Image (spheres, protein in one colour):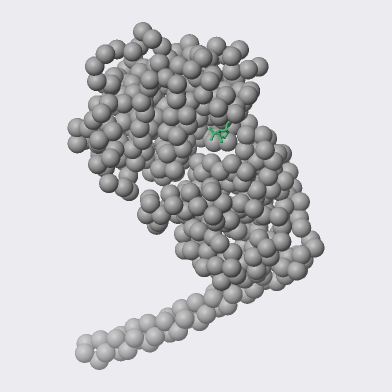
Length: 427
Ligand code: AMP
């Protein structure tokens, strides 16, 4: 199967050739024909599957057909809403590349930066708008954006939208769209809430499920290190110094943790930068650029900031902390091994992360291979000891709390007794 077989127009074929896309990915092969017919689509797929091209190529083709090219100021005909700024930027970059030989204009808007350059672009007139929900509603409120002419609407990463608390914003946006439109809805997972939301947006959609969970888990080489919490940083430094690690994305559960890792790597002369929600948009973009161009070897990220990061030839993903949601593990390791390439994922598991590991292995239906020969790995006994330490600590806490409580009870009862005696005396 080639893109030509999918009846893609010559200007787009030319652009795809420049991108080096020779064959369509599974999601492209299955969704492009449906979308070119103008039907709605419910896609269960995550980034890394070629989803962006799957939805944007048919939209570009429909919008750039000669009979569509009306005169006068351009009106926004396609709206793509996505949860994070990084993903929004990536989508617009892709769309610009695929529509390079058409006369379509696209732009991106997101919060955390001044709005002037965004409103200037909107004033000039655009066909395709990629947006994060907050800034979109803000600029609609200020009268810079009108959604009356939308013909194609894409809601991307719907599960992430809900996780980030965007549900009300999404409902407000949907209410502003014209009833007659083509709608596309993508989510990596399909919970009850997501299905509910999709029903608000879609008419009678075609459904496509791409199972990256399995393919990602099969494609990426995975290794597990049982390690004491205090030894994680030493293990990380050791792996980064030894293991043919070129471009490495390290996941930390917290923003504070990400900063700490960067500091310690810096002390070990390993160039690293952090990317998370407390960093300004400019510094996030700078960090991403340094990483993409190879100026920094290690990017330490939290899950939300890393969502949608698309770096070619990412050699390793390291789960410094295991995620507490099993699906996140698959999202994370899917950052390496993209579009058919293979990659390696190392995961560190301390004693208190054992339950997360259990959930992950259940989801991917495989046991992660355990690295046993390494100076910093735990032989299991230490993990048990750490468990015991935790247990002892909590038992000690319990005993301490109990003795505090009994001391308090003793004082309370003493006071009650004195009051009673006082009352008896006055009576
Ligand atoms: P996405 O799932 O849209 O984030 O895409 C993941 C990566 O695959 C991006 O780097 C795309 O540029 C790349 N990609 C998308 N479609 C193809 C294709 N047909 N052939 C090769 N690479 C592709």
